[in-house]
Each structure stands twice: as structure tokens, then as C-alpha cells.
Amino acid sequence: MSSERTVLRRHLRHWQERGLVGEEQAGALLAASEDLLRRNASRLVLGALAALGAGLVLAGAGLLVAQHWLELHRFAKLGGWALLQLAFTLAAVDLARRVPDRPALAEAAALVAGGLLLAGISLVAEIYHLDGRTANSLWLWAALVLPACFVLERRAPAGVFGAALLAALLFEVFEPGSPVKARDVDGPWLWLGLPLLAAGVAARLPLAPRALAGVAGGWAFGFTQLALLVFGAAQDLDSSDLGRAWAVALAGLGWALWRPHDVLGTTLSAAEWRVLLVGSLAPWLLVGAGYEPGSPVDAAAVAVAWIAQLAAAVLVVRAGARAQAAGWINAGYAGVALGILVRYFDFFPNALEGGLALLVTGLLLLAMLFALERSRRLALRRLAEARP
Image 1 (spheres, helix red, strand yellow):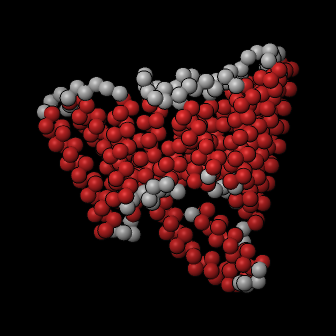
Image 2 (cartoon, one colour):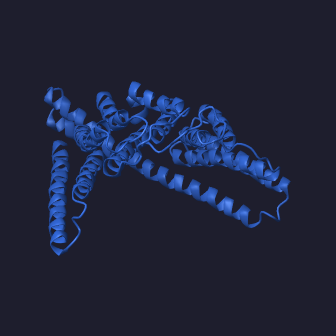
Image 3 (cartoon, rainbow, N blue to C red):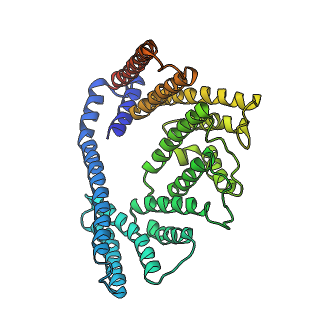
């Protein structure tokens, strides 16, 4: 709701500056939209509760079956699963028709139906002692969920498909004999490329949740910050030797660089997303296959990691302030604080030895946190003051 109100206020302020509406008209328009905004907020809360309820239904059904697993005949197991699958699939259609003003109920039913497909695959494999590639069952799950994205006219199936595709890709790169078998995953490429690829594909489906791109963007920023901190401090996560898994990792990264807003959301501009991704991955481009102590180029890569981590955090703060997104402002300041904290102990590893060192370190950290928190609060206050 806050993001929709922010966009509305930005438009009203722009119209006021252009002389298209007066102050009284802007206030009247905003007041007239409050009911719609509150309705959307209630839908968000109901959606979250519906998702929680769907998860509890799946967990409860799984525990109930597990408690009586040995007592149930295989046909009873399969029949019970088929009835549940049919019931929740039909409920997703029927609830959307009967109570269109409460879409969270239909979304919850569609979410449970998508999860039950994986449960059915696992059930059949267990009953008939099917043993094979784990990735195949996850590919089958994704394939079975995909038609629901077009038939059910719900947002939940696209989210389930994204999760199924990501799980299938992750298991595929670890399968022996896979055409995209990963050689070494001790680097950022796979853990960044695969989620971006899954999010990009799922976001292109009909009625895909807008949150998919936001989640992918948050993951891209958070994971690159973590990888840069780890590499800069300990020179771990240094490998770029993916082998055949480069095919899928580069697909996700290439898509994110080509059309950032399809994959990563619109909080940052396309150019800012490209700068963030390329800048964050620059240390590994310099390192090559892996970090070698004593190499001047690899030492330079460590310095680049220090700079890139803080620069990316500052970039996110600026982008969040421009987009009036408080969450991104907070995430950026958290990145700045962590960067300074890790750098301090990286440069002064013995800072906690002795009473005087402990005292100085504590005072420095408190001063740093005070300054950053003051800056963060100032940015959020300016954001609040900018809204009419």
C-alpha cells in the first residue's frame, strides 16, 4: 500500500508543479483514493495470511499421512492425494468465481494445488520404488505446474513454477553426467545466475506476481554484498571454474544485464542494475579461475571487492531515495555498515586484544553506527517530507 500511495503522491506533486491541479484538488484526489489504497492493503495482509494457511495445510496433511503411512494401502495413498489435488485445483477456480472480491482464497488454493503436485510425484516414486535422478522429478514438477499458469488465471502458479524451476536447476548442476554439471561451485556465479534465470522465466508467465522481480533484485543485491565481503576479507568464494554449468549461470546473468527490469525489478534504473552487477562481479573477472596469494592482479581484485561492496551499497541508498523506497534505503545503509565493520577488523585483526584496544574498538564502532543511523534517519525523514 505504501508504494502505491507513494506513486500517487509523486504524480499529484508533479501535476501540481505543472499547474494541472491545485492543492485542494490534489488533497481531494488523494482522499478519494484512500479507500482503494486501504482495500489493497487489506488484500496484501489477506494474501500473506492465505499463503501461511496454505503452507500449514500442506504441512498438516504431510504430517497426518506420515503418522499413518505404514497402515495405509498404496491405493488409499494415491486416491487421497488425487482427491486433494482435484479439490484444491477446483477450489482455485470456483473461489475466484464465487468470491472475486477475496482473491487471496483462490490464490491460497492454487498455491496448495501447486505444492501437492510435487507431493504426488514423491508419493508415486516411494510407492513403486522408483529410483533415478532427483532433478528429473523436479523438472516434472515444473512441467506439471506450467499449464496451471495459463489455465487457472491465478498468480500463485507462476510463483510455484519459479520455485520448481530453481530447484530443478540447482539439482541438475549437481547431477553426475548432467550436460550442465558444475565442476566447482565455490564462487558467486551459480548462486547468482540460477535464481535470476528462474525469476526471469517465471516473470514472463501470465499474471506472474510482481514480487518475483523484487525478490530477485533483493537477492542479487544481498548475495553480491555477502560475496564481496567474504572475498575481500578471507579470499573465499573465489572460484570461477564452473565447467559446463556456465551455460545456465551465464543465461541468468545475461538476461539480467540485457533486460534488468524483467528480472530484477524497477527500483533501480536499468543502467544502475547493470553497473551494480558488473561492478560487483568485477573482482572475479580479475581473479580468473581462482585467487592466488602473491599475485598482483589478484591483490588488486581484493581491493576492487572492497570498493565495489561499499559503492554498490551507496548506489542502492541513492536509488532507494530517488524511488522513495524505504526498504532499499535501509538495505543500502546496512551494506555500508557491514562493509565498514568488516574492513575495520580486516585491517586491524588484533583490535580486540587488550583492554585499551577493546575500549577504542567499541567507541569507534559506536561512533560509526551513530553516524550511519543518523544519516539513515535523515534520508527517511527527507523521504517523508517530500510526500505531500
